[in-house]
Image 1 (tube, rainbow, N blue to C red):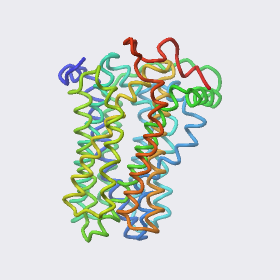
Image 2 (cartoon, rainbow, N blue to C red; image 1 turned 90 degrees about the vertical axis):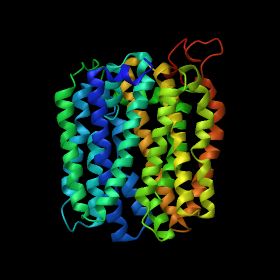
Image 3 (cartoon, rainbow, N blue to C red; image 1 turned 120 degrees about the horizontal axis):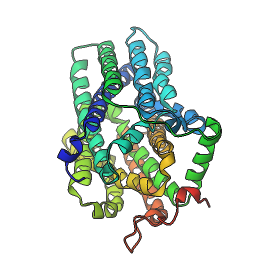
Length: 410
């Protein structure tokens, strides 16, 4: 499966793609509205960054205790949990006059509700597409993320010129209702995996094996840490725009989403499968390096180009996720991708928190350069450990093909 026509010929994939489009548009509009309200109320780069990316921190508790529900609950049913919680949260955020503390409490609602089911979308994708179509399917879903972030942030920025943030929260709530209808009516349910022991015990056991594996652990870290530090740069777009004297956060978010979109198109559709893995290293460095130039406080046109080019590097996540598919047990696929998703979101939240905290002390553009330099150093440190999961020289799928590396710790 190599073409978009082949993958979109699958009816359920079309529904899943539409679900991802509407979801990302709603989240982008809601996030920009919340960041604008927070910065207007507090003037704090740290709180603004946390309003954009801090919510996933609350998923840590669920990931440590009930993440195996991603496998033991039917994937369609599990996928309904987070949009339902987002619907409630957006309606509450639309209430006028809320203090920023209350808004932060409401922000946690969808992440608390969805922390047990964060791997459900990848389970659905894995069930819908054949194995050879996974990377193209994942890349195509990422296209939805990129396109709808561009649309969502751009539209949100324009709407904020005319309408109140409360209106944007209501629009986001409407999007969540559409997502729930699409999931319920457009996808058939798949059987859950048999329950083996208690949810908490199973979650902890699988997490221990995954994070203890010398093969799988570096893949998780490469997905989480360098990307999270770069997201810390993006979390400072609002205060960076204030420094430059222009409200340009929406534009910066839009062009970085467009760069991510281009990278996913190239990796998922243009690059031949046998060459994808070789691009992990250069793409991981492409992601942070352009942000080093923010140390010079570039003017807006240059900043937009730098952000666009850097975000192409996010496409390294696709072959890294492909390594996870080959290196883990299919019966634990929901928890594997739930852990990957949770770690990614937590890494982004931590990166945003670090960026916001440092920006309290130094200028936003300087902080962005420091975060980028840290991302480069982490990627350098992970280069050798990642070789353990690389394809074998004789062409066998992965270096651990003789057995599941998740079962090997050390």
